[in-house]
Length: 142
Image (cartoon, rainbow, N blue to C red):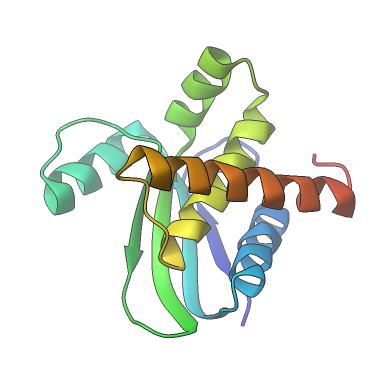
């Protein structure tokens, strides 16, 4: 099943390509997409979700929800394009580079990876690099 992508902002993003990146991560980690939604939103929406579900009153780059267990993934994630833009500047990356990195990061959360400890963060970073490199081999991003 394809990944459903939604963009609640006016900023142009390549939803098809982002969905393909999510599927590549799921498949690469031995999973498939049952019902997966990727929502690209603005600061107000992500802050509201963060406050309501995680009791954090600030905007963040991504929030991921997994609704089941097993190899067929049901879940959704939200990515704040405003925070992506800020982080891209901070890390010296392009907007698209940071957008794809955080999308891959969110997909890794869906399959069960966590980033709570330095070791877990290092493993997620390694996997992000792996999937970004695979994506670069597929073609040029818009």
